Image 1 (cartoon, rainbow, N blue to C red):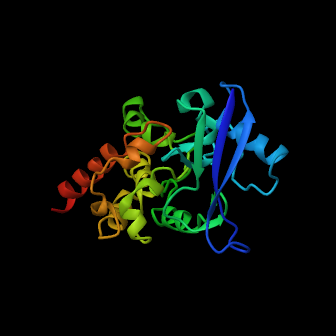
Image 2: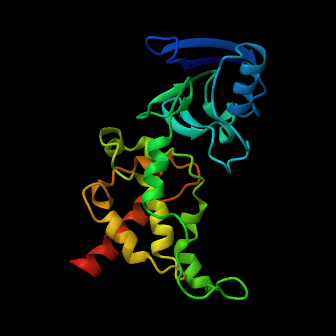
Length: 233
């Protein structure tokens, strides 16, 4: 089929403002949008810039706005677009490095703040730290996050406040707060319990709609709020 692709381009070293560029190419409906971008870059416009890595929905690198929705290009089939036209933009609410590649410094700065790693002061065991299936069930969904940023860059609270932790960081905080093997849950709750943390989530559900792994982020955030209410208030 013939696909008309419109890409929002911007090179801050050369351009005064972003602009749109159109490409027309023959594609297989079963191709992924990432394949389409690779074809454009390889045959039509070598300057086109975007991030990619695994190409299989694991690394999260190719998150971008596709027809107005934050999605992974590698998980979006041409036939699922529902049209022979597609508009591609960088994720909203972030500084653009070039074309579809955004500056992610703030995203990772907020992520590091929640201490996104297991903290356990017990002597290291001779084997792995065991966890019951019931305890793992509490965190399993949150472990599926691939840190693509689609949720964080769909959040109006984040658009207006760069210091807000944002959905991805808070989901990672949940993952360890509710991990039975971790000893720093209270410390992370302190990090979340402020005007830049969990209570700036207004349950708009944009993050849930944007998540390519179908994680119910707002449910996880409600559990954090309940834990805080039970422990503190």
